[in-house]
Length: 355
Image 1 (cartoon, rainbow, N blue to C red):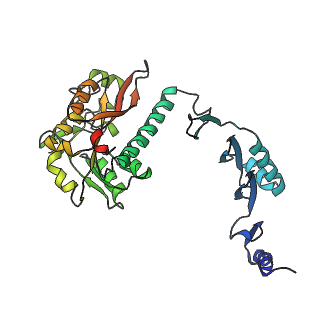
Image 2: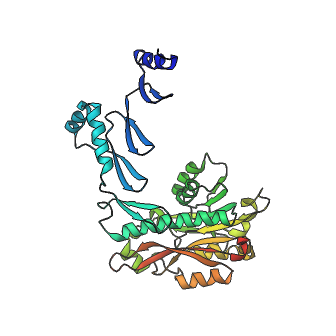
Image 3: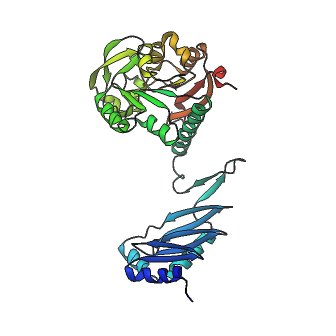
């Protein structure tokens, strides 16, 4: 005798519903498109649209890559749609048993695997290394923000909000205060932060003294108050443009009260990416730089901008103020020689860790 549950499952297809019976007491009911159940290991199944073209590839113990096939043209798609469910499932199961194009690289004893597409990583190794450095830097910073209980990040040279967005994606929930002086980039920043009440944005730059200055624009993320060096002009064609925009510059110490308003126990972190102007921003903090538990600055080994400090000069100033290096991550490399042009330098006050 059929149970009420079983009779209901038999009735649903007559009402236009698709039913996939997963086992005793479990079923997947959907309005559109049939599903198929693809075993990917002991105790684990993949539910996919029937004829959805999913490929399942094992890359390590308990590690699987699930990707959608990309048929070469309409004929391939039509052929795939014509395949019965059993054939599609058999194909997926066969793919699941074979190690596909993905290369699994074990990351030490962490239990994690780095999955590499050999075709994507077979080109210029610098591209892969810089992408890895950016990833590692972002995770290092967010881990430090948590460890040092940072509740306000000063994002100086915010551009269109890339840094703030990355912090949010990686789980930072504290206040972000972003400063971007150029009008076009600020419009994008303002839009990005519009629905985040803990992300404040200001349309001015920071420096050693209050001033009104001209900034070079139309250099995308490399807009600078400083002119390019001969080396910079040779490296970046964008520096051939000479458009400028008048902007307001304020001292960091003058905006801190407003930026930290409402925080009972402020623990700020200073991030600077101002294309050669970081030391000017830092100098504008005066004695209040002592309130920052950590900082991040883009430091240069090869000068792109006239008057910008070299890495050893900038780091010496930061260290004299009590900060110590926790990480150095390449930002750009010189194509011809492989030399690092700039590093993201992450520094903290060890005494502020509470450890």
